[in-house]
Image (tube, rainbow, N blue to C red; front, side, top):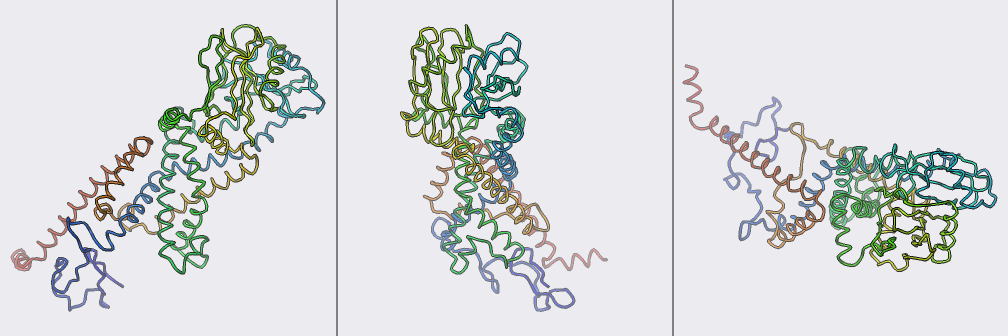
Amino acid sequence: MTTTRPDGASPLPETPSGTAPSSVQDTRSPGAGSPGVPDTRPDRGAGGVASGAGRRGWFTALLRRVHFFAGILVGPFILVAAVSGGLYALTPVIERVVYSHELTATSSLPGMPLADQIEAAEAYVDSGATPVAVRPAPEPGATTRVMFADDTLPESTTRAIFVDPATTEVRGDLPVYGTSGALPVRHWISDLHRSLHLGALGRWYSELAASWLGIVALAGLGLWIGRFVRSRRGRRDLLRPNRSHRGYRRLSGWHSAVGIWVVLGALFLSATGITWSTFAGANVTDLRAAIGGGTPSLDTSLEGAAAHGGDHAEHLGGSPSAPAGAANPPTFDAVLAIAKRINVDSGDVEIRPPAAPGTAWVVQEIHRSFPTEVDAVAIDGATMEVVDRVDFATFPLLAKLSRWGIDLHMGSMFGLPNQVALFALAVGIAALVVLGYAMWWKRRPTRGFAAAPARGALRGAPWWGVGIVLAVAVLIGSVLPMVGYPLAAFVVLDVLLGWWGRRAAVRRVTGAGLSSGPGASSRSRSSAR
């Protein structure tokens, strides 16, 4: 059994009676470097900067501190994002089961003209409304969606009537969200993942999680590489957990092994998730536009004005506005036929009537699986002339990468394998958060909040190292505000806590010195008398 000295030096052995050995006569704590006390302070070179091992290990110490505190403070947000994201990855399968009746036609026979299907939907609605969009059945056995504006539904949500193409039988009536056409279950899970159903304020959570996930992952990767380089015999344990380990080592082994297998996926989700965010997403969009990597938009104005467009309509709504002017059913067949002669060759398409006077009809490919088909054409409904066209083949490279990244993130790029991989990745990230908290709990102090890595990593860094760290922090903070503001707040709080801790330590040492000084025994005798 040992007794830990209050100054943090080596434990003192206890005698059987539980007291310190009699050979230790002076209970005062001599300073480092005093006779009989080894000086454990690091050697310092010019300028008072720690040299030797302290200087060489400053970057690892910094990574450890960033990984620890970012994980502790942002872990709950990353956990919620991982769990909800894993559920979202399963929604295509869930939709096919829950909404099988609405999505499936009773016959695989050739479909009737779109005009007949639209008229059947209009008769079912019986409100005199005209469709704001139509999605023809993409394949035999699927239904056609005829979508109507409905003021009773939330923003970016339309009322979809599902029609059997061969019989014009109405198979269902459901609200659908945005240009992704998300049905209620998928929309509910998507909104949970995006904003926790808290509206604009809730989107701060997802931006916080996406912004910090990449930083935590990079810091963890740096620590893993350092351990791998230093380790000789235990490198295999860094790739797969050693089942013979127990306690903290077992948890740490699982954390390291799982982390290295999911780190690239975590970085990908962080980078693509940021593009959807409120603040950082706007910065990314501006940066892409500045370097010529923006996504081309379709000009629907019959007078030549710019039209709508964008990458993230799947998550951010973007459903069409109520049409102005005539949108009679036969015109849907006519504009689709023209679009197929121009650049539309996918079965997954959406046809939108003019959104306002003086605008064109739009036929847009919505095929998000590989190979990507998102070509679009604008057609004058009066003359049936092509107003504008956009072809994915001519997109700038950054726009293509953005499109592919979004589709991979949403699980539509490669279908079921993509969705399974996303679900497994989400499970891995959630497990890392749980393992991280379990590791902290195992090594938590018996008193206090957390056994955090020591401060002072930058005090041991060379001047150029400090400069690089500060420059990177400022750059990241300016691009990712949800990193910059919390990081600045944490630094201020950490400095204040460190200052308070040093003051408390000085008071304890001063108090101990007074109580054990030369006059302590005489004061005690005087007090007794």
